[in-house]
Amino acid sequence: PAYNASQYIDQAINSVVMQTVPITEIIVVDDGSTDNTSEIVKTVAPNVILVKQSNSGPSAARNRGLDLAQGDVVAFLDADDLWFPNKIEQQLKLISPENGVSAVATAFEMFDDLGSTRREVLISDAELKQYTPLDFAVFTRVFPSLLIIDRRIAGDVRFPQDINAAEDLIYMSQIRAKGQVRAVEEVLVRRRHHKFQLTRRKEHHIQNLLQRLEWIRDNWSSLNVLSVEKAEHQFWNAAADAVLIKLWERDLDSFQIMRQELLNIWPCNQPIPPYLTRRLYPKWLYHIKDAIDSLMVKT
Image (tube, rainbow, N blue to C red; front, side, top):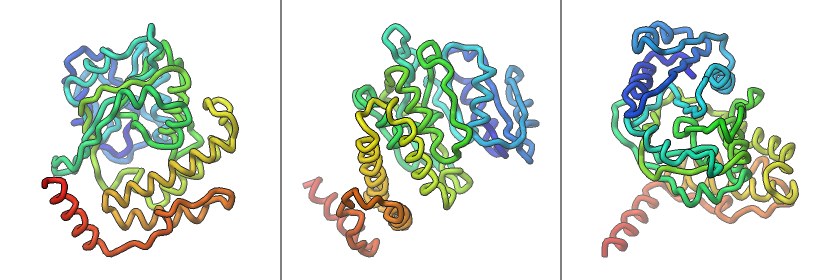
């Protein structure tokens, strides 16, 4: 899926072309770009299938690509992300319809527009195998660019086009309901961190919460959970944990915003975790604490 991606699209396509196993199809869906994305796509690789549509969002673009794809195994790549050359080769070792594996993900690293790695995000095969469909709906476990999907198991699960902030989690929940999700415990994807990402929109967090909550309430019976109350309880705990991660990362501005948004919609019948109401100290105090903790670990 590509929308005004002229700055990055050639790098993304080249990372697919350079795979160590042959790639049968490369499909780019230009989702109503107003820049020269399509013109660049035509010059990068001669075998790219380019489709243009009016701007309809990433879910519609991915679904259009799924409609066109002929292969049994399909992979996703956002226009601003990159694959390592052996990504698909490593994942194909785990994809297995005989063992009911519907999808395989990989670990990844975040990088900025200067090419500098910001951090690595590791992934556990053992944990992914144990997660239920609800686990994938309540917390971000993987991203589309990390995935290959086996359609012989997953069928033609589609991204929800009426949802614009939580579509990835809902898609993965449905994929997990079809079969097991595995992981290659190796960094094989680079996810670009930049100011134009949809997930960095001011309203993204609260929209994501509300859309997922509504979807879980409507679909809880298909998520391997006993009641809607249990599904909601797990959702609220996971939402609180996602906010807490921002504190651990020392992203205090995001922590304060996300915490307040979550508290604004927190239900009266759910106890509020203490860390959502604790006092927030100045950033320099956390830096001192982190330095002391680091010294204690070394000694």
